[in-house]
Each structure stands twice: as C-alpha cells, then as structure tokens.
Amino acid sequence: AGARLAEQVETELEGLQQATRARVLRAQTEAARLEQRTWNGVMVALATALVLALIATAVIALRITRSLRRLSVATAALAAGSFRDPIPVSGRDEVSVLGRSFNTMAARLRRHDEMKEEFFATLSHELRSPITSVREAAHLLADGIPGPLSAKQARLVDIIRRSTDRLLRLVNQILDVSRLRAGLLPLERVPVDLDRLVARAVDELRPQADEAGVTLERERLGTRFTVLGDEDRLVQVVVNLLANAVRFTPAGGRVVVRVVDAAEECEIQVEDTGVGIPAAELPHIFESYRQAHPGKGGTGLGLAIVRGLVQAHGGRVTAESQQGKGSRFSVLLPRERAA
Image (tube, rainbow, N blue to C red; front, side, top):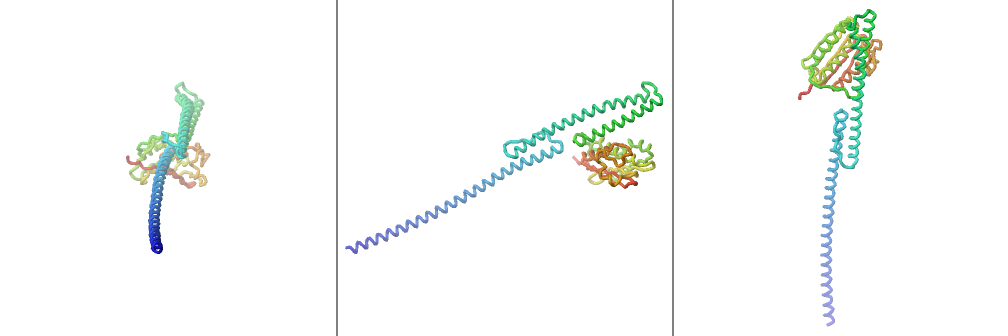
C-alpha cells in the first residue's frame, strides 16, 4: 500500500511538472508574442512620428520659402523703384519680424523719395524761374522792344543773354544728374526710331558744326532701328555726344554719327577726328565734373548725363580714343520687345 501511494504521488508530481512546464512554455510564447507586438507598435509609432515630423518640417520649410520668396520679390521691386504695397505679414517668427522690418524700411524710403522729389521740383522752379525771366528780359532788350540800344549796351545785353543761357544749361544739367543719381528722372517709354532721332539731333547741331568748320555726317548700317525709350532723353544723349565731338574737333575735321542694327541691340556711334582723350583720363570721362581737356569749356556733366540716361534705358555706353587722332563713343540700347 505504501509503494502504491509513493507511485501515485510520483505520477501526480510528474503530471504537475508537465503542467508547469506547459504553462511556462505558454507564458514564454505569450511573452514573445507580446514583445513582438510591442516592438511592432514601437516601430509603427517611430515611423508615424518620422512621417509627421517630415510633413511638419516640409510645411514649415514651405511657409518660410514662400515668405522669403515674397520678401525677395519685394526687395527687387524696391530696388527697381516699383514697390508700393507692403508685403502681408502674420506670425511672430523671425521671418515675420524681418518682413515687418522690411515694410517699415520701405515706407521710410518712400517718404524719403517723396521728399527728394519735392525738393528737386522746388529747386527746379526756384532756380529756373528767375534765370528764365532774366534771359527773356535780355532777349527783349536785344530785340530792341523797349527801345534802341547803343553798341555798348547791345554788347552788355548779349553778355547777359549768353551768361543766362549758360547758367540755365548748368542748372538743368545739375538737376538731371541729381535726379539720375536719386532714380527720380521720369522716362516715357515708347517705340522710338533711332534713325529719325539721330537726324533730329544732327539738324540741331549742324549750325554749331558749320560755325566751327566741322563736317557733320550721318550714316546707317542695317534696317531695324526701333527701341523702347524716351525720345527727348535719347535726343539729349545724342546731342551731348555730338556737341562734345564738335567742340573737340578742329576746323576742317569730321564728325560722323552712325546708327547700327546690332542684332539684339541698336547702336549709335559718334566718331570724330578731334584731339582725342588722354589714356589716363579715358576711364574717368563719364564721372561727374571730370574733364579730359579743362581748357576747352564745358561743365564736366554732359557725359555723366549720357551714361545715366543710357543706363536708365537698360543700355550701356563705351568710349575709345587715340590722342591726336579722335574718339568714338558707342551707345548700345536693347531692342524693342514685342508685346
């Protein structure tokens, strides 16, 4: 009976051991399954967080890029003088702060431009009006409207008339240079035929050339000479170049103004057989108040105005010269673009 009981206990212990082992295996299996689910959840969570982070980063980058692009366009417009409305700004980030600072700066620049424009308008009126009145009075006296003048009086009146003309030209040149530097010189952009424009300038300068004994000629190379620009200002460019050429060309010399169809550009060349420009002065001739030949007269502003007007039209001007043999100035203007 004791042996049977021991055998029964041994059998029950083996069963319990097996049941325990089975439960341990089931627990291990469940733990492994739970661990796998946990890792799967962690990986999904990490992938989701990464995707959300990338999306958030892309949205932020897109907003920053859009704001910076808008700011870049506004900056370019401000530099070109066409910026008017402030850029829309919202938020408190660094880009928004930069945008608000830009709007403040643009508003102040607009006020400064308005003040400069008003100053130049006032200065123009206050200087030109009395000079014009003196000049017209001198013309009336020279024409004998108030009565006949003696020879001495006529000579004095002629001095007054020439001096006021020269002073008025100087005032106009100084104002033009100042406006060009400030970017306030208005330009009316219309299709302009350069060949017809050059003919107009040549007709204006021909009496001066005839008086100086200089032959003034006009040439054309090509057929297309239309550009987009301000006709009166471009005439001023050609007249300034021709006046310089005639002034620095001795009697018996020759001045040629040439219009050239240069593919994407139109070119105006003014070539003379004059005294030329010293090599040391050639790089500086377009600077204000700079004269290559101080004893020949002039204000040193004509070529500075030429360069400013040409650049305002999107073109460029160059000069080449040999002292004692003459000079050639070339103005290149962009071709009129089709609408």
